[in-house]
Image (cartoon, rainbow, N blue to C red; front, top):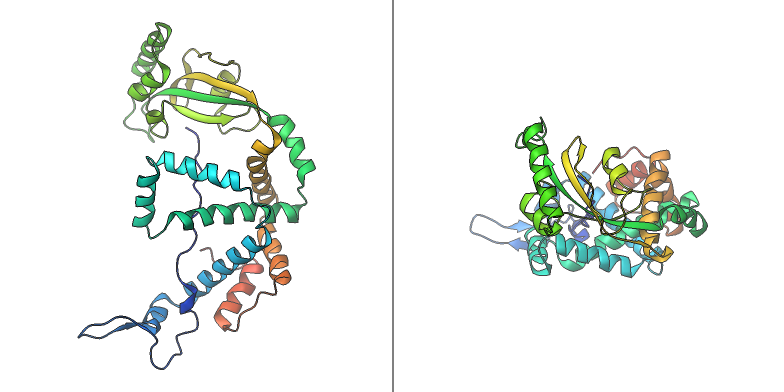
Length: 312
């Protein structure tokens, strides 16, 4: 129903393997056997110069970004994002287990969130998006609504498991009647909602504003016409039939909304100019005197800053 943005995990490949391909002795032995050994040289040759160049450059980008913006990253926002990720995956222990299965740690995931925040700061700095501009956006978005919904989906090509339109509407009306008879919204959402992204969480859609949301028109028209604790009638959209509730509403402070406003501003800047990231990075690399003695890495950096590097 609503898009959920996942933080991109930082690359875990060690930069120490760069430049070892010419080591005559083959480098450190990682694994030994009667059939032969696996050395650093073997790993370098297996990975290939292109991927090594991308990885080395990516890690350098992270280093300079985190150094440049270490005093500007909103730590509270990072902690809140981490908490949301843990909740989404069933708690801290389950989340850490999932990260471990993918070869990551909680600290590396947190570093990824910091890099993402630093990237936002970099783009906005280059675009000239300062606090004054963010405050203009804040005035349009400060009144926030905490929404929840129950979705009874209709069968379609993209959702073959949905109900027929008639049956979905009938079921939604039955759920609405239970709500009017005193039923608990979160409980009924868990029992009936087909939105797998939030049904287990009582249909919780988080906070949003009339100005900044990703809902379809029919949904937003109904949702933002409600006030706190009010529930809509059955609302039809392309997804099916919804029952919407405003769990809470408030005027948020600028500091509360600033991270989200800054991220949206950066996204808009990239939409307007697809080369802005490479141009901002070029300026940053010049400031930090970034260069490499490895010809493959140097060539990749050049192509990346010119916007001709292949996507990773």
